[in-house]
Image 1 (cartoon, rainbow, N blue to C red):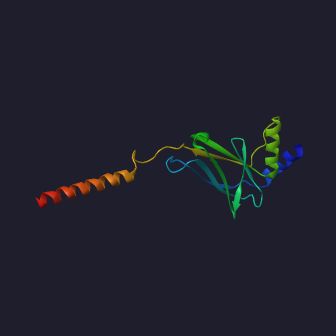
Image 2: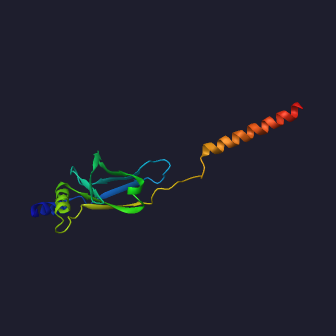
Image 3: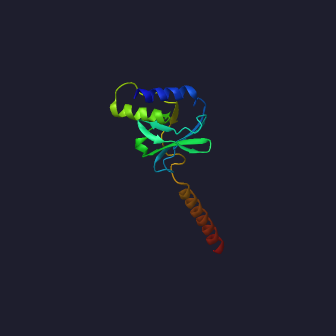
Length: 155
């Protein structure tokens, strides 16, 4: 256990210090059935296999080229408006985190990097009625007006 923590600390001092982060969260309840939190980042970690921890849940980090991504998708009620912290760990760090979570003793291992994502929550955006309904009402009014004028002309 101590050797894993030492390896994690050694890796922290050797690299993974430069992160460029972009994030996105679902905000429109009408367009999505679930809330998604996406975090995309580039780092100088090289080929290190990273894992993420969000609210105690261990998630994989997907890599494509020089970019990496973490995704959390849950029901709207399970991801309310909040600031979520995405902790990134290398292989040794995630093993130490899992041991800490299982045993609950000692101090939690330090993440390589922590990313804060502000999620404003989901809400209904736009007009209180659907635009299709507005278009239909306008079309009916135009038809009624044209039909009324036609009836007066033919009298």
